Picture 1 (cartoon, rainbow, N blue to C red):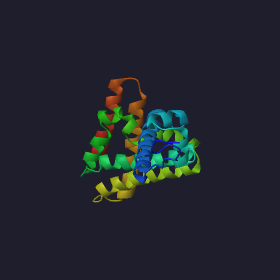
Picture 2 (cartoon, one colour):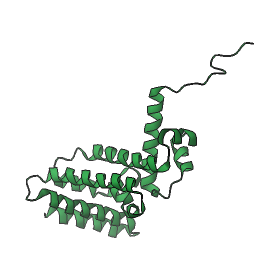
Picture 3 (spheres, helix red, strand yellow):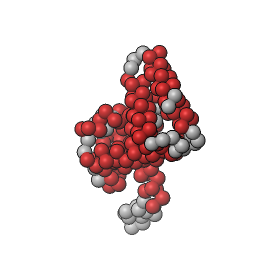
Picture 4 (cartoon, rainbow, N blue to C red):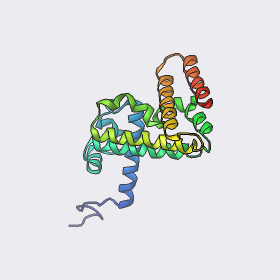
Length: 191
């Protein structure tokens, strides 16, 4: 009996392909979670967005919770890379509280996108979220290093920025949304 090459054998996926699939899953999951919330996205949508099967998703992560945990870290890394170019506190604030960032919910700040859901999440997810808040605050503190008590000032600035972005995204009045962002930028610039 003649068989074609590869028939009858289990085809192994290369390490590179596994890594590529994992990156695609994390990127799509991070986007969907930011756009629709952790509880608003099912495994079907996650697998479909990544172009993979449920089996592929579960073989890599084991559970939706584990995927959410890793997608949160992935979102923090990619967002940090994008804002890493800010050299001053004012530049960071201007980038963060911009109309462009407000509109880019799917690839914007994961903290602003998911903060309302966190009290109802597992300890593991909340720990990752807390790490994201700390990382953002530490980045801001580094930009405020010449100020007195930069850690406390950074926490206040972090809370102001996340709150302003969250409100700007939540209201249905575009003018009010723009005013919220501008008022927060002005307040933070005066500090």
